[in-house]
Length: 390
Image (cartoon, rainbow, N blue to C red; front, side, top):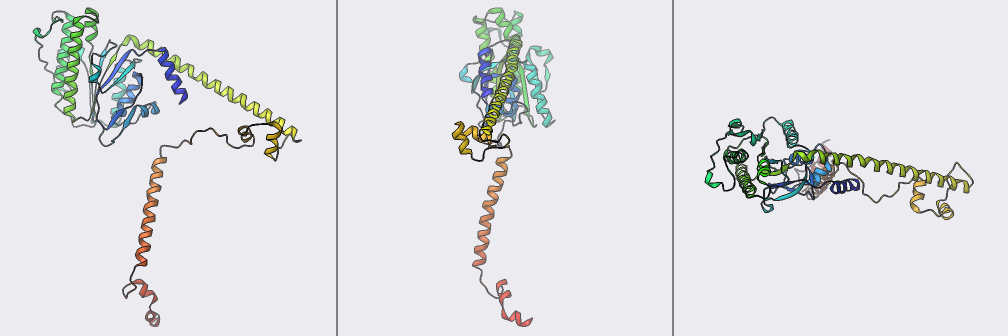
């Protein structure tokens, strides 16, 4: 645990979070309990865990990230909206249920492929949809959500964005597609688990063209935020609230730098383990020398002294070293580690014992209160008439 915390602090010191992840909606049956920045490579474990899937990697990290309060009301779907090329989400913080700084260490498509393979392993009756909105209406006219027919946005509504500029036009088209996806969300799929991955890639060209602080950038952020709200509300209503809706940024230019720093930090960790092993070896050698000197003073080099108290007085050793020398386990101050089956077996034995004791008590009381009449087995086994007949 200490090693994991030190690794986390080292990563935070070396890499600043270069993205954001916001959970816009999650049911009351689960709770995101993460603290501080998270890596995008862990998102492919966190999202499946929120859907009820057992984590394959970083199990302890996943357990600390998700708290499941009601296993019978888990989410039935996941809607993720990655926004390419930017570092800040165009969503006000008050609209998000949970907000995290994100360390982008892999591409969003890698995360999608990992989540899709996890869902497909359990069942084939799933709806898995990845839509890159940058492909345009022509490429996405017919999708797994049905035929997308986006309504044309009136030019009068655009104040700073110009529909005649290619970058602005493509971004507005992605916004229209997001609204079309929200309109088609009412077609609920009766399947095991549904995952919708909606990639927005048109915001970065707008910011590069107009600037991050321009009026056009502010208008683009507002349009995207409203479209994400429309998508979130539509899917939440479709799945009766049993859905996780999240949005996160993904800047591909930051992936290589973050990944290299994280790998360097992980490579440095085994060196600490080697130092611990070397330190343990040194301590063991010191204890062996202490044992040799103790046996020489007692007059026999091959046998341990019979009286431990005399060894303590002569060598003035603390109790921990004496216990180690005579073969007793050293007290570490930590509780015993139990397997995952321990609470299950414990509950089975506990409640079986309780039921067995009360059942036995009820049987004893019933036998004690039994009327020894002619119809009872007690009368038949103790009757003198039965003995005479024999």
